Image (cartoon, rainbow over all chains, first blue to last red; front, side, top):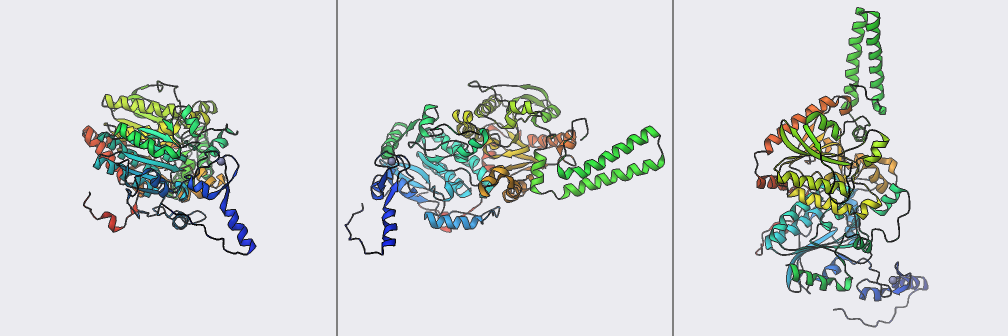
Length: 279
Length: 335
Ligand SMILES: [Zn+2]
């Protein structure tokens, strides 16, 4: 638990001061209101005015749902071998390094074992800030091991998805991660423990078209963008603007594609409840 | 191409087709004017030049040229192979829930007299047929039909042979509304657990999850001039270079050809196409494919249901090279 102290504002040249001040406030995409950043942070990165869910860093996500101190990370330090030596305007290896620096994570996915209301689960979550949460061989391997670990220990599994889909830079290998993780999940079914999939903003492409939509129960945060093809691709195909709310959680619920929409504040409680009912 | 189909020529095919046209004219001339020996040797010389030119052109195709061949309008599609390799084919329609998707067909047939289940994306020859078949881009009902038929195959212990030929799953409002992602996801998992042998063949385009949805197999074959990747080169270029016309560059970066996939250990066998590409001789290409299918079916048939699933698991489990710090690998007490 953090303590907050009132610290007298340091004296700064006016220019610097201005940018600091600006950094303290953000404009909410949901309601357009200017809100105090610290208020948003305290509110689990949810707009206090309109409930818009902003991205949550992966560690905070896990902290939010797990019993305090129960998380034991696995498969740390897995790295891509860049099997295609992929290069566009920039080398893939450089992109990876830049993402590691900006996100503070080694890859786009963190996984391990933790407890929810005392119950052990094998779980993982995406870091969207790492190359758009894209799935290459490392993410695919970690997801696969989540299911393998859950199978070995006969415990439930949970995955929080926030991903633009399969990672282009590992091309065919990224695609094959969809099959690999699906096969591991198919095996996990035999132990008759639940797999709960939680869809966050955004969940699209190869991640949506594999484990994200294979959950025994599929939950989503409010207004998350969820679909196979991205909205831009669809707009280009049909050459018209997409209707308001298309591919959002509420739209998917209405079309029978997900089980429930769960507010971030209630996620832990709902997961605990579902695990209690199924595990 | 042998036969009468209207020929469409790719740029790099043109010199060859022009030379072949000369040969045809010369032969016609020889036939009408009577067989002069001089003409005879000229014909033989030209035939040799044709063969040599074809070898030269096809010896060093760029990846983009392979993509172009995979999309050649005269290229054989799923039903062209079905017609040549199988007997007793009966198409089975519909997902029993919403519609029948003509972009992904399926049915029962016999291969060497033995019943098998066939699946495949199907492109159209004409504009009208292409609209009906969505250019081989299936919607959720297509994948749900495929799943229904795979389960049928499993129930009656019939091997599944799937022909992959799609630029990708259909990206449209209706497809999204009916759960495109879910339809593909369920196919992947159910296919992984299927207790009968599955052989998938990329016969043209293997675009993304829309292709993989019928590709979780025991054996993956690819025709020589086909491609398989996570994204089409144009879509990749649109994202990476913000320019869909740079597909050629993206094709190189993606290393997406059959040969690439073979070298990367994704594919079990490459199947030779007729010289100059499958469209130049569909019969010969089908014959090569038939021989490969026969061999792999013979290997897979003796495996029982459990071994078949194990075999498939092992195939996919090893895909995706990663490096791992030594400390992870060390066995710990809790394991
Ligand atoms: Zn707001």
